[in-house]
Image (tube, rainbow, N blue to C red; front, side):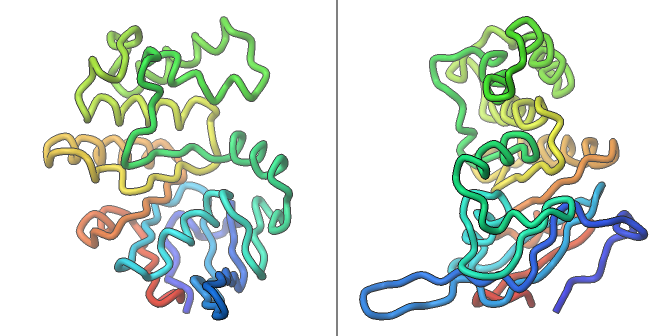
Length: 233
């Protein structure tokens, strides 16, 4: 079953499309399909959530969508190009150019300033240092943290650290922002502020995929994809 499309998907070609994705793992002498024939598309400008209970295949699907792993079979199309069997070097380059990641644990470098954390993806894009710093400051300004540019993560609150992570996700102007449980380590007030920021980015035309086990959080998106037992419900 393919979830109904949002209004932003009408008359547009998918930015990312999964076709009959199967991911098989082997445990001892047995095998099982963590994903079993998963098909759906993400369209430019959509805000989509992927949700499901523990053990549903949600994390495996996040890794496939995030180009962190290859499927056992099926196709991944990025702007129409089949990248299903890209080698790791090609996948890494594609990830850096096309995806911006926001994680539950923030994944910031502990002894590195906010501006340097934000600029990190640009190191792999051959952007000159002066331009890297300029773009990083622009992104910190966008998330309301320009005054925190020299601060290390230890000098920031949890909500501020996640804003730095969002700025880092934006710095390469990605096709898709992939957020994995982005409010999981935050108090309710900080979590609400982060979700508000995602809505602002969505209204600007950003494509956002939110992965969460929390159905109430999933409902913040304009389209919900539910996975259960490795299949789309």
